[in-house]
Length: 506
Image (tube, rainbow, N blue to C red; front, side, top):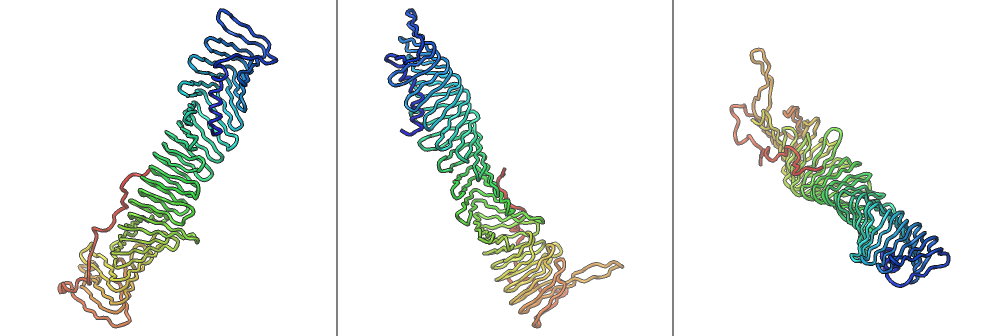
């Protein structure tokens, strides 16, 4: 039998053994005993001191009705058996119902446990003990303390129930709740209703769950909130292990990575300190908040890898969507290196910025404070800029295009390999003393490489090393076959207009 079970059994069964049958033997020091023949009651007064079957009881006075097997003890009651000691102001035991009541400053202790309450009731028929007016149980060996307003004990099953301002403490662990069940054999607490859990590393709130106190791990359910120095986690259900600080969150997951300026949302999240990576799955979204803009990265799954140099790399796939006020993008997969501000897009990527659409086999972006500074498109690279609200398109095509962005506008584009451009130049024309800007025609140029300078989406000038193959068409004589670069496509319907938030997060 384990120490806590010995304590509980000794505590609650001892009064039955003491008064159940046999004769009382007065010890030296007992002062007086009276017997009322009519009521068949023994009354012991003075310094009462007697034994029964090796058990010793002390009190100021006691009444013993033998035929009913009822005992009342009053004043400084002390019962001792082996290493178990019971103290109270008064006690009643009824043999007919096999019940015992202890009142007033009840204290019980053995070599391991201490118990204190205002009163205790015990029913041997059901094996249940109750205290109803505040109790405290303390294990002096492992620093375990439980306090509550009401407590129910079932020694035969090793389960204990507590309700009303329940506080469980063990070393640095502290749990507060309204209702708690403690299964001793499993060293597990089950909590029902709003609960707070604190230790040296976390502070958690939930609506129910269980906790293995010896292992410092458990499951939290219902409106879970977990706070750490550098992280906040909100979810429907969380699994926590103090060892390696492992967290698994499920359902309506929302995470604030304070030092990284990141917020994470999804259906599932897992992280642990002994592994350099975290996983976010199911409608996964990472939000990087900076001073000038916020960057949203969405995918079915996002894996975050931490490096020793405080670098963090995000791998997102599939169905990647990226959104900020300045840029939007889609791809099958993406990689984001936050420290360098590098974003790589793979498999049919498309990037939009203002009225420009950039695409190719791969896209590499350079960000500064969530704002685009440079975009490199490699493989079947195209840049298309809509002008005149989409009536015309200034177009670039090549093996690789490097675009430089300032204030959300492409200001320069380096087209390398099989350079091809189609654009509609404009000039200022005076009509009736009013200067207006008009399209004067369409230019088509082929070259090995081109450098195109743009202003407000319009081609300002073009430089080249080798003489290009070019042709100019007036607006009324444009050759329809020359209007578009190879593989031209314009995809406004695919452009993310806002982050997709499929559910509410607290």
